[in-house]
Image 1 (cartoon, rainbow, N blue to C red):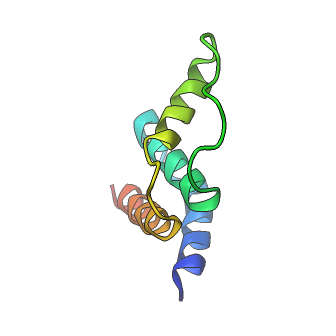
Image 2 (image 1 turned 180 degrees about the vertical axis):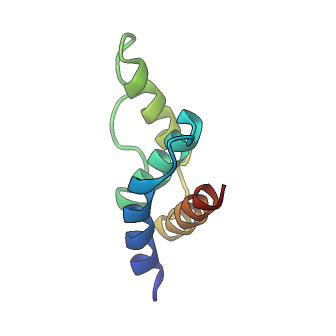
Length: 85
């Protein structure tokens, strides 16, 4: 399997992560997923009252410059790590 297929499988596996998965881990996965599928953050930061949106934007923007392939590999590794925990 290539990295794209592994990433696709990990994306589906992420939907069934344990309920104990922390919000911090979910934000890491969100940022990695967006970086892998879209690339560098291309939107403006959400407004002051949108706390959830700002957290998600920050998680994605923190990965600026990471290649899509590297983000895919990191995403696969993180999902695997969370499944084993």
